[in-house]
Length: 290
Ligand code: UTP
Image (cartoon, rainbow, N blue to C red):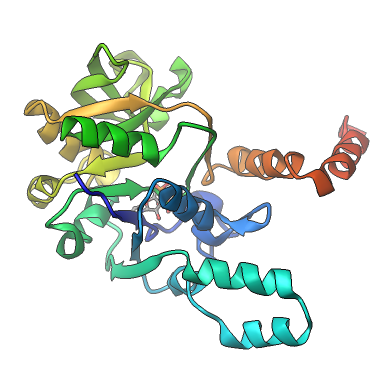
């Protein structure tokens, strides 16, 4: 199995992140020094992916622009003698091949993936959500690609979540296999706590085969009136064609403000230049009841 493309859906409206996202795409909000989507693209590149398919909309063209050359900026940096920054700006522009497809109406994640059909219909591909961040060793899309290559099946990434949070996620039921992955038997999108089949929640990392497009084409709207990818994956699970891999490391849902802010602090605390001063400032702020 040769997986080269990552479909990154970025066409959503980011309503949880308003008003910040009124005119700036959520995926372009910065976490520490980089926009969110750059972390996701870099995770894909680290896993050997070479092409990114952004599922985008008319307000999101700056996402594509971020991965393109900006000659005026490069000239300015060269004139100013800012060689390191010039190198960094060029590195970002050259890191990946960009393909963009328009999702003309935001009908849900399943519909966003279906929008990439013409680009991905002949090969297996990764899906990485544009607001879901994974960090750490042996985690993220690379682990799912290994599992897909070993089994020839589609793969979803899952994490264990506390029971009270299951209703925010798609949740799987599965049988644990000897290697620690799961044969998925069923999936439920945003279940009530009492209906959740487990505490294994689907996060924004998948490896899919082109057969998913046939299922998505017949998929009716589900929870929230949206065409849900989770519902389409049930079609694969019914044919024993879906496994789940539990991912470790740090994961941040950048569409949630607490997670977004924590991710910023996480990176700043790992930066030698900023760490000590940041800790000092945070100490001054606590307790903030004063
Ligand atoms: P989310 O539900 O987290 O993002 O979808 P959203 O819809 O932008 O945000 P809220 O919930 O209103 O705050 C996960 C990812 O899927 C994309 C989003 O851009 C996001 O990166 N998405 C979602 C699409 O591309 N199209 C859709 O129809 C829905």
